Image 1 (tube, rainbow, N blue to C red):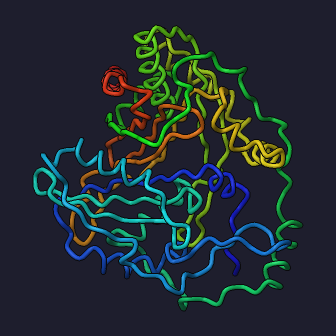
Image 2 (image 1 turned 90 degrees about the vertical axis):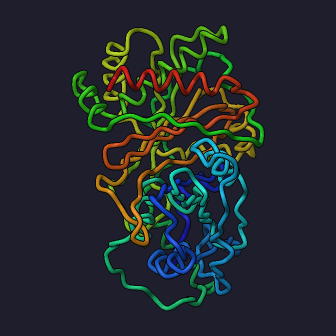
Image 3 (image 1 turned 30 degrees about the horizontal axis):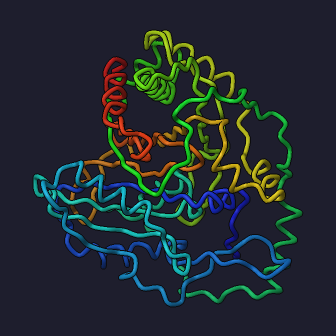
Length: 407
């Protein structure tokens, strides 16, 4: 089979964004390099490179890296200073913005030891073109203990010929449903000008807020909403507080929410399959009334979720995709939320005591939010360009306060 990048993958490739997770472990798991070398055999894309095809042969394809070497992807380091969460986040921030070489599989794993309470952490980073959040969870499920047995195939497989690529490309063109229509995509009016939209630099800083999944769920149900609505309520409230402190008075913020078009996938079928739901959400009012309003707004927009691929194709055809992403003022921030494992996990016999999502802001957006649940813990990572968000700690404290009010 030819493993070809999908139209949604091409959007992720163009954004050149890297994502990942911090897997916090109760103790040092030992020889993690050998462990991962064995377990990634069940995740084909972790040993594949993405290559461009000859003219007329369609989108890029993933091929087995015949020179794959696990030592190029798995690393070790000792956490400096106090070994606390802030020090760990600083390491993770530097790793998630370090470009992965496109000449090899697009992922890395770094085991960090020397953490407080003798804990360790495995920082996983991959290019977004490799997979979306649902696929990332499928990869993690194959790396931790107790993964179901999966049939592996001979490695490396022979790369497809030009003739095979051309034939598959034409079949793909005939088979794929047309998605070049903007019909049904409801985009709010241009967002109000404020300090959230500025060209981002190379640096990123990440902070964390946490809440109980079950308590957020109970609060959301009280107002006819979901956990994601509760997250949006906390985010808009916190941003509203910070913007007032900056002298920006914005009644509504346009939030871009990626929505997965699949409920699950396997480690053999990764890639991106997401739509976009841009919504204008209120920043003011008490948290309960704001939650009720946001729940009603997101309900009314769920039928309008559409792929961003058609818009990207038009911009790319005009040669304006990069310029648009770096100058857009349609969206103030991004909020992603992935439902993680409901039950505790183990890696090499060591308990996984925490999961933290990693992301990076792109597209003229100075701060974004990524949420990931694990058991009953809901972890929200605030990722920002520190040169444009000097009040990041104030924002994080405001977000935690909003979460506490809801839970």
